[in-house]
Image 1 (cartoon, rainbow, N blue to C red):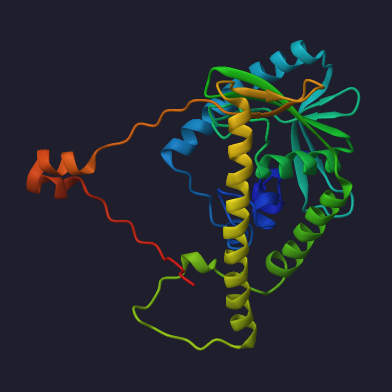
Image 2 (cartoon, rainbow, N blue to C red):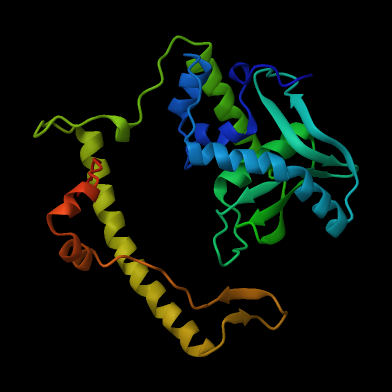
Length: 286
């Protein structure tokens, strides 16, 4: 079956948004795309990254095949769920055993080349596994255009079922149903000095946040204590291993360039106003 119109089904990159863990889009965005038939709008930078991702994908797949001795039985393999036709998955590649491949060109893994897969990638890979009936998702990743690594996750059926149920409920309630999806709170413009009265549920939520903030402060103090012990033990070393040669953590030197705003304002004088940009956002304080 072909991919057809992306507005007619939920794809793997949209699952993270529906369960609320995507840094790029929300369930509301997906609703606007599926129900209201609004086209997704991407920034110029995003379009450029997407273009290079597509161009480099065959190279990443080829390199992964060489390094991991993989044998592909298909690329860009699209399937639909046998019961829920509105759920689709397009795998970059499938192997002849139990792997689904999801190639990435990214800066998300940061310059330290972390071993932690971003949550939205995990969701996508696990969803691929469930849809294609595979037991593992392998990610060939090109980071920063200069570092190639491969990552892998094992299929978690319970998490897949959770994602599946969330997508089914979303589709039935908001896409084929008559209910409008609520606008994310952070997108609602505030009316200056407007007030509202809390009910018992909201008062409890505020109190719970206060308790959590207190616990977070205590936990942060404990965390700093343990970090001090580890750093003291490592001294001048950058990498810490256990007795079985498993890497536990790294402590490496990093650099960050920043501008001295005071010196810039002194140099530009009144002209500095031409370069200032005002961004509005809402801050919650409890």
